[in-house]
Length: 93
Image (cartoon, rainbow, N blue to C red; front, top):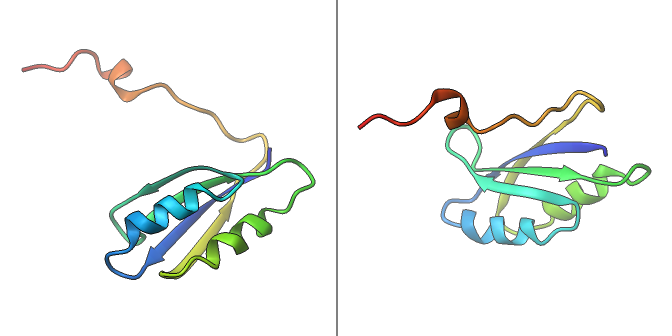
């Protein structure tokens, strides 16, 4: 399934409201607040033949967004890993 990541910068103080609105957009499979150069990262997946740009444009219309950067996934080059604690063992006290 074609996908993309959207890195989003918002106006100060509206992140939680925007996260809620992005989560309601069809095609968004995850959205979370982050620290760093961006405030929010969203993962978008759409059926083959559907344009990611439709989802991106809907997100860009949400009030309070300052900037977005879209990075498109490479089809066939995605793996899901296991949780880090599985590799690190039991926590020590």
